[in-house]
Length: 337
Image (cartoon, rainbow, N blue to C red):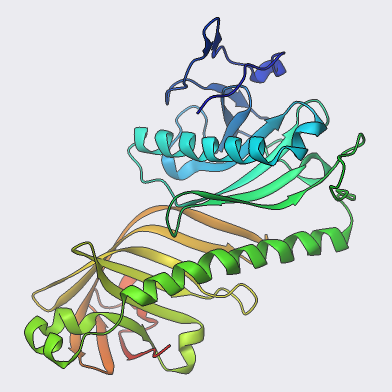
């Protein structure tokens, strides 16, 4: 991906990536670190893309936050192609860096934008209030990366056809922003949920006979038919690997999210799930949290047939397994739709 060299450095954020021959492609180590008073920082690529990071001195994959686009002028906010190219480039930088740190990149990153010199970020490097002129999301949950803009706001000079940012203390604006974010979550994760449920179609009678318990596990499960609206355990085979997704709804307005996702296997009557990703919504902060994890839980398979699945916690007492099941044992039924 190729960007024009900026006509002027972005103050302390600038790094030397331009040459007489054009732009040098940034490698994972080619970033400038900018630190903030409360500890977090930015890893800045190509002068115009930054990744927020919790600990800039020793960054880890799961500590990389949102993508921040650094604009020179308000006019750039009217260039949809430039914004999309920069957002996708930021997602690429994030993925490269995550893998370089030995982690697994998330399928989704939030994107913020600010005009350099038009305002300051807070002490933790967050772009908030009137400083944030762009809000969007890059997601690759259902295929190749896709960038969606939720909000573009003009500042003092104005951008033709763009809505005003309003004021940081405007409660109506804040509510509107949160509603837009929740609507985007619905759009993104409903598509992903539908795709997973399509893979998890239960096998027929012959498949259960020939495939045994492993084949019978394929499907969408919940504690009851009514609970399918708030919790679904989805098990299916994809490209020869058992895929496990435990979806939960943090609240009525947000809907189902892939609370835990990873792989599963059935070994000697024990269902083993290894999760490498979690997606949660913080209702208090009004923010989506999406990150890499490393969690393994094991359940005794007490029985499974066409309509019911019964799991028991292997750890006993207070264990991760009991937290997942909500007790020592749980009976699941199939969600039909």
